[in-house]
Image (spheres, rainbow, N blue to C red):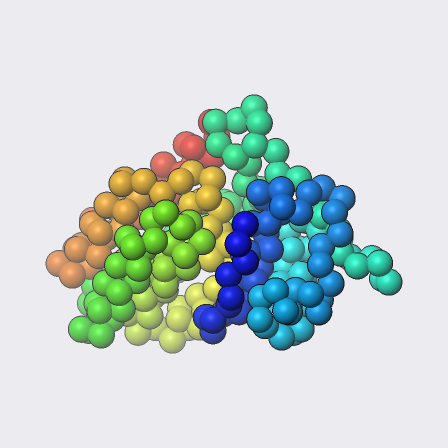
Length: 226
C-alpha cells in the first residue's frame, strides 16, 4: 500500500485509518512490530502527538499492543473467511450503541434541520455528498465525507448541544461509518439513500428523511447478522 501524505486538519484520524488499513491488508501481519514513532512521523509527515494518538486508538480497538522498551506489535488479525462479509472490528454491542445514539440525536436533528436549515447548511450537505460520490472507490475518503454529510445535518439543526456532542464523538462516528463502508461496500443503494435524504430535507419532509435513515440502519443490521 502506498503511504499518502497527511494534509487534512484531522491528522490523528487520517493516520489511524492508514495504519489500520496496513494491518487489515496484511502489510503489517500478526505479531509484526510496527515502525517506531519517529519512522511513523516521517512516513505520514505528522507530529509525534498525532502518531501517539493514532497508536492509542489502534490499541483501543485491539489491533496492537505496546510494550515498554520494545515498541508496538500487531495483535489482532482480521479474519475474512467463513463469512459473507469481512468481520467488523467493532462488535455488535458497539454497533447497537451507536445506532441508539443516531436514533436519539440524528432523528431529532433531522426534524430541526427541516425547520432551520439555511442556504449555507444545504450547501454543506451538497458539498459533502459530492465528495462522497467522487470517492466511491476509496472507502476511507468516502467515509470522511459520509461523516461530514451527517454532521452537516446535525449542524443545520441549530442546536448547539447536538452539534457539540456530535463533534466530540467525531472519531468514533467516522470509525463506525468506515467499518460499515469497508465491510458492506459502497453501492448504489447507499449513495441513492443519501441523495434522497438530502432531497427530503430540502423539501422539508422530515418523516421521509427519518424513514430513509431507519431503512439504512435496518439494512445494515440484516447484513451484520448474515
